Image (tube, rainbow, N blue to C red):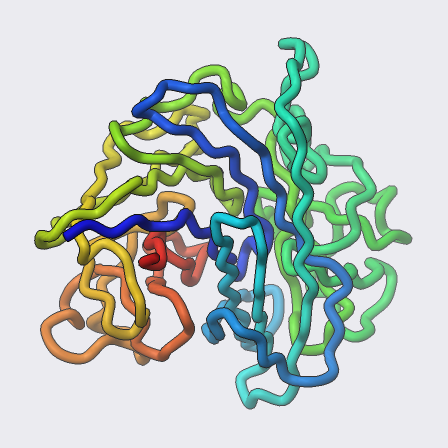
Length: 339
């Protein structure tokens, strides 16, 4: 028995944009296409009910005493159509947000070494030195929400201000004196206190000049969040039992791609119903190691509660996990949906 899996892109609280280029290791061909998924113009009116998965989760920050929850899952099929559902709500589920997803597809182009950076591959903006020195004009979050102006306490009280004092009268994404490690902003959505912006280091990990080796019979795609992850997806699945694995090479803070990734290509390594997924992925789409479920309020039943396997105990629509990174509460996992 064999099954063919579609590559899928899942969003996260720190990143509602997914950037990928597809490779085919078996044929050793050059990349085929670039695609950017971006969220824009998020409103705060009615609940969302769309055909793909629903997502709900918790993201905590000491930038505010408010706890808010945001989860999203986006699935892309092989005809490049997208259905998306985002649910954004406060602890008491007082409000919701809705976003529209667009796809931009471009042909591969030759980029000189002086120009080569992540913006040439679809990222909205980037910085060359440190995130605290970013001086661009991006003014929306990874969730597509317009940023609140830094000179007002509406709708959110400002606990921190940009290190760049010239930005105090703007709503541009900036790193603050809370030192988040990347540009952020308070948002104009009363239900979402703050969020990251879709801005990365321009030449992180050499962009595409020194990519990790793609395992045989897999395709690969990029996910951009706090880290850039290169996710490997099996072309075909065969009958068998999943083994512990993390099919992601992460562009780490040392500017190097990790090499301890592995793949498992059995029929347990995709999901039809995310709540019954029994595969053994142990990391997120950006390569962050999953935390064990034992001490979490939301956790799977049975023996899985003592593991760090990706699961969907609250029926969000796709496997996910809490992470071991203190700055990233949770993320979706690199688990494709079965065809």
